[in-house]
Image (cartoon, rainbow, N blue to C red; front, side, top):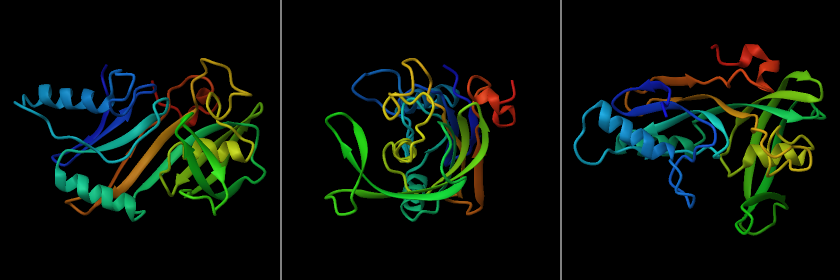
Length: 229
């Protein structure tokens, strides 16, 4: 599988993650993005031995869009620190069922993961081990019972966008885990990592990459936000 490269230099590799590919090896033992990219670097640069490539953030397996990997340990350390400090701007596009009560809002919840069923739940702030999750959304389009949201993610909790939007009555189109009552098996989740913006770990200038979702249902209802083909 050819992985689109959005930006690359000696320290960074930014790519468009395909949907339904795990970012790293998991229990399924399916081909994963990190291994595929290491193999690609090894071939393209004719590198002997092992290739260093570090995962500094994640996307859920069914979600596609822009991701950044670190090609050096210095870049990995500085990017991880930027993420911890909240200096990593992550923007997403999501198509949800229904329409949020407010066209623009900040969602602040406390989330707890249940490892038995691999689901995350909104819980009381007093719940032990619960972690605060924050995002902003703005509705930028609506069509036939669906709403297109632009999302600014402030924290990176597992399944965060999916569970927070479901908690306000707007599950993401195609999400089988948090919208099983309204989505059908086989529908592809309409959540996309749209842009990443951060300070370059060595050059100190602003680095940004953008990825657009494919021109297929339901994304094609808003062609201005779809990938040109």
